[in-house]
Image 1 (spheres, rainbow over the protein chains, first blue to last red):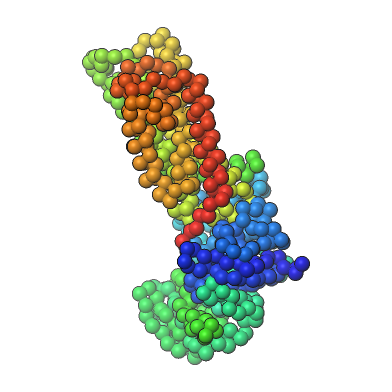
Image 2: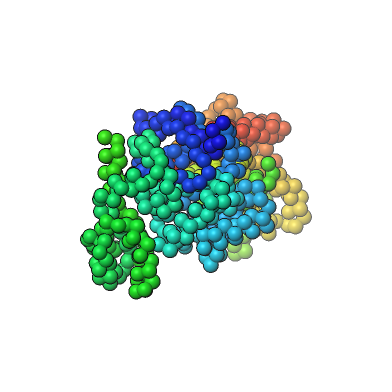
Length: 306
Length: 260
């Protein structure tokens, strides 16, 4: 016994001629583990295997020694927030989460109670009675997270959970993930953005071309990344005002106007991310979205696999 | 098993009731009401329709309910039991819950049957009620048992066709297309081919259960004799059970890979 919660042994999965994941061996213990890799690296395939949505072509994946595929005992311990922006659009946030909680075996009253608690954790209580079809992108992300939390799973798997969230929601979600891990939970977070993962954990797995190319501490990767400027897209209708404020920051190397916002180049993304909410509040800017347009990670991966 | 099953039925019903498909299917289910209303208006204008309200009701039952409304509604609901979840990419939420996949499918199947029945049966009752106004009250009462049997045939048909089309939804990539081809070619055309081949259609057994000699079965009656009601019911139950079992087996084993 290794003491690991989740084990992958020789795990491979291919789709016809295309390799999704190739010979992955993993032992995941409680805490947050960041699954980092560029788009198409195989992160989602790995998460689908871990959550029993697809079967391995070769190898095994098990939770506490139990195989995952169509195994209700395993599913009871597992919470999953999928990447795709898909919800039951006609349901309210509360009925969406409560209905899914009932699938975990709770009575109607208990499911509702748990749903309210989970929705509270993601700060959506004000919008709980609105249809999720009318939610913003960030709210949709948070309600997806709530349905994953509703049964307080031992293992929480989050596929790109911060995508589309505004800065404040990102911050509170990161805090929530860290709290879950601090309480003894096992959390796997996938992202293609190093800074997101870094804010949650030091422990990362780098996935590239279906393989784990590196695992361990984030610092070494961080050093490689910081040699390159980092690009961040800010969606705002107040392009000129926001640009005028940002251009005064020393670490901002360049600003480019895009269709619906700005692309900012910075050499200190951490500092940028932590200062931005203050700036937005101070000037009452309307920032609708923030997306890392960073493609430097790809360069780092290219460097690592050469 | 019952609690998770009820939860899946509840979630699926919640979703289906609010869908555009259900609204469209409700309108389609009400289609036979139009000729019934037309006949009543026609009579009220002192025109003769040359038949009784009950005879017209039985003709409408076979021509529209059994051969069209039942097939169309169960086709659309049956093929979408799994298909809708795949198209909307919401199936993930169901498959990561602690419920066997077969139970998830069973819950979706029951909700599909329930919704389809709720659309078809009230429409049939409404049509019968409208056309009954054309007949004397004493005759209407004597026809009630026949009408009740018609309703049971519709319910049995809904169950069997939902199981059949549900299997298409679970197994095929383009279930609606397969279902349409099956309905138009197999269930419709085969019924008219001489010999015994029509006994391989579901429709044959449903038609064999009809309590009334409608006189409108036309060309079909030239080619095939009905099967006894007992054998028909047993055959329909077996067909429905077999396809429901196959669907549960398929869903439990098949991977439904959503595009990233």
